[in-house]
Length: 162
Image (cartoon, helix red, strand yellow):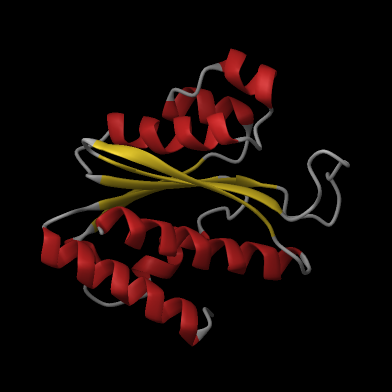
């Protein structure tokens, strides 16, 4: 289901977390659980992955991750502040030590001139470390954008591991 290059990144995430004694959690919007699915497709992933949140709707982001509704209203769900709040909220709700969050517009509709189809915000938070953020505009169809987002999100986790 996942391309081998993405599975290779996922394996590196799992191995790096295991070696560092870290656990990872996902908070996903536009990928709808694909990041968690990628990690758990690898045997032995339960050593470092226990859970993930799929918060596709704004209400879910607020209820499950504690993203303030006022923040979503001010910046939009697809924004740096919301991506950061998703990752940090996931960490605050669990004993996990690294969280990755994604929110974006996978298309084919929903884009605007300010927020085009393919816009994705990725955040990776780690306990006692500054939250990493990346804004990307990806090109392709819905499936391609979502799969590229998985790869970018896993790479962000690797950056947080160091």
